Each structure stands twice: as structure tokens, then as C-alpha cells.
Image (cartoon, rainbow, N blue to C red; front, side):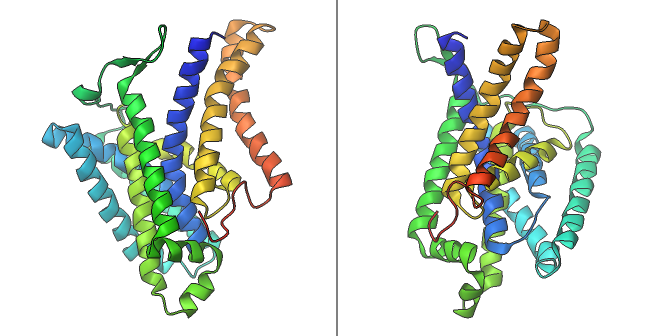
Length: 308
């Protein structure tokens, strides 16, 4: 593998890791603070992507579509929390799984009705098109570099908010001792609403910035939800810092593993066989990593301990 290809794969892994972090950050807060299993979190990623398609077509501006999609994703998440999810907080995890799985099916079918079953795509904005020269032999798409930067900025903002603000203090306390937070007179229902709304907006933002890179189709959030759960298990439930580190690890392992596994298999098997089996082996590496960490650190790499 050439140095240029290795750098490209690392950058792509970093970009994928940033998307995973945006999804996993909201998921780990919802799960850590509320103890609520929300399988429909991946659907909010899909909703963000379709909102980007809708608003780009409506306004003709990608930047306007980003802000409109964020606001709509936040409102959509709050409506789901108010009318559906808050009635499930005291129910069993099985009830939560069944209810949120039903929402997945409903919204996936609704996406087919509104936008059709075909895969859609949108172009990145003109000022983020083209590529930048990183080395003499390496040019990298500007938009992908911008998604990395956006993910880092959101990660920094989340860390500062969770670590140094009052609402962050309550979120950290809720992730470790929710009963104590409620006993101190905090409106736990409002806290849950804020956490859920922020989580929905982050997942929607991930869908928006992923829209010009990946195909937009019904069910696009289902597979990434599984990886997001792996991320929060590796990082530690309720931990923003853990989600960030784990997302980067998973993104790099998945991206580099696909190429390295295929290259190694090509030395022994035919190229067609290597191209089929290599990506599958790379996907297995993520779950092997999760199993290994659970053996030695059952609470994750950076479990919530009152700090992000």
C-alpha cells in the first residue's frame, strides 16, 4: 500500500468516524441519561438526509438547507419525544424496542411514499467543491475535509457544554445517578426532553452532511445504528469523550481494514474472492474490538464518571 493511499484511507476513516460520533453522541446521552433504548435513532439520521434533499430543492442553497434541516430535525425529535417516547420511559426495554422498531418501519415506508424507493443524491455546495493539495501526490475533496472539521467543531462544542455548563452538569449527573438528580428537584422530564432533542438534531446533522457523500435511500439509518451502538459500548455508555474516541477507532479500523484485508487476501486468493471477503473480514474486526474491550474494560474505554 502506497503512502498516498494510506493517507487517503486515514482521512476517509476520520471522516466516517466523525459521522459515527454525531450519531453516537446523541444515542449515548439518551441511553446513558434516560436508560431508554431508542432503535429509531438511526431513522433520524435518514430524516436529516431527506430533509437536506427537500430543502435544497426548495431553496436552492445547501447552507440554508443545513440550518432549516437542523431546526426541523430538532422539532421532529421533540415531537417524537412528546407524543411517543415519554410514554415508554417507565415501560420495559422490550416495550421500548418494539415501539421504536415500529417507528423505524413506519418512517422508512413514509420515506418511500414521499420520495420514492430510488436512491437520491445531492451535490455539495459550489464553494466546497473541488479538492485541496495536501501533499505533492495527494489531493483530497474539500467537502470531505469540511465534514471532518464540522465533526471536530461539534465534538468540541459538546465537550465544553457537557463539561462546563449547568445543563452539562445535570446531564453528567443524570448519566451516573439519575435518581439523585430527580431527588434534588430537577425537572427530569425537561432534562429528558432536552437530551432527546439534542440527540435527534445531532443525528439529523449527520444525515445532512452525509447526503452529498452517500446515497440517500429508505432504511439508510438501519445499518449505521448498529455501528453506533458498537461505538457507545466501546466508548462507555453516557460518555461523550468515550463516544468520540470509539467513533474514531471504529471509523479507522473499518476503512483501513477493508483495504488491508483485501490486499492480504489477494496475495493468497483470486482478486474477485478477495474483494468479496475482505470487506466482510474488516467488518468483523469492529466486533472483535468490541468483544476484546468488553473483556478487559466492561464499562468501556472512557465510562461516564461525572465527566464527559
